[in-house]
Length: 541
Image (cartoon, rainbow, N blue to C red; front, side, top):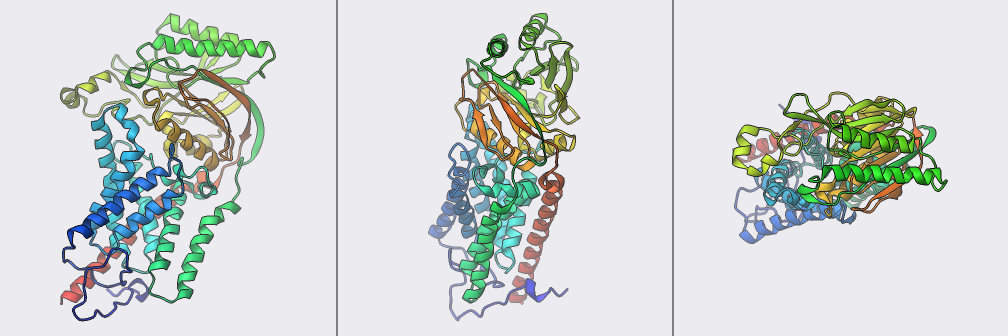
């Protein structure tokens, strides 16, 4: 089969006796065979250090560090590291990049255990091994910037899906909420943000490495700059303004932190009821505006109010005092004796508990334990998870005081499909109920808050975030924070938030953009692999 000429660049004639191993930073002549000769140890270590440092730099762009300038440099680090190597070497360098990235980004997992932190980070790093391998193949061809950007999207898609439902933490869009570039998410979702982020860096490197004359280099550079700054011209704000509503968010606080944060479960509930009753007094005195409804966080009652009369009375008293519906985060028993559910309940001061949303996307090894019979014998710490949560099967579309609300619980905010579903279901306001008590004093709080801000930009919706002990906040559809709490404090936020009824293109087509770019990445990587093998076989003949 003959391939179009534009797919295969010419091979440059090699000088007699010239070194056939590509240097680390010099341009690799497109179409030239990659040598199988082993590089010196110092050069291999230099490549690995470059890849590892690149991963660390990308992590530094995310909260709590917020060094956004480091992201493009880190991505360039991996591109440079894999330049001119074979695919299997690229895989190893990609894993090194992923390890540097995720060990820093996910260091809050040390709360669970150093072993959990290392194992999860290294498993997730394997996906970046696929990126490194693909980039090693792709960089031999003139169209590699497009292929490199698409393969990155494919890796993020796999990470968000596998294993056990995936872990999308670390998508590039979640580290860019403080710059206009995230407006691309409003057009094409997280996948478009990642694709264009990688493409900009790849185009600039392609311009630098190109053996063509300056006009071609200039074209590549101009395209990269146009993409980088083109987001400024994109719309931002409410998808379609639909009035406003006064909302109050309660952060009751948790006295203890870490895995023992809910040892005194009744005290956690009373912290939230006390704060709500204090809000009611302030409203009655005219010191605060009366809210249309109040939002409590996930696990604001970790005891089932339907099976415990004391807990039910405590909640009823607080709801009656404030006189408006309260979205209560509760852990409910059942089905059966060995399962529980993570639920948001709309609790009315007149009719009591009503609509419910059951969390759909559960956290493996946190809310449920795969292979329970085997793992509890091997790792005794897993005995701290005595019962598995059962997932819900419907989006969190609730109506509270006449306002269509999209309820998202904790880690669900990182999954694109969860927020898309509630917006498609008519939500005019997004609510994130979360319990971050296990991760107090770690970067997890700021990272999750940034993801919530991204969802506001992508969906063109205000977001109200209620956390047990921080960070709670109110975010506008532009991603701007109009109020947030400090961690490990008791606080109440209130304000008039804008409602929206329209649907952004990021919500409408974001899934298909991700699938399309992922497939493009697979095709590009396979094509580069096949062309490379054919060139190698031809040279050997």
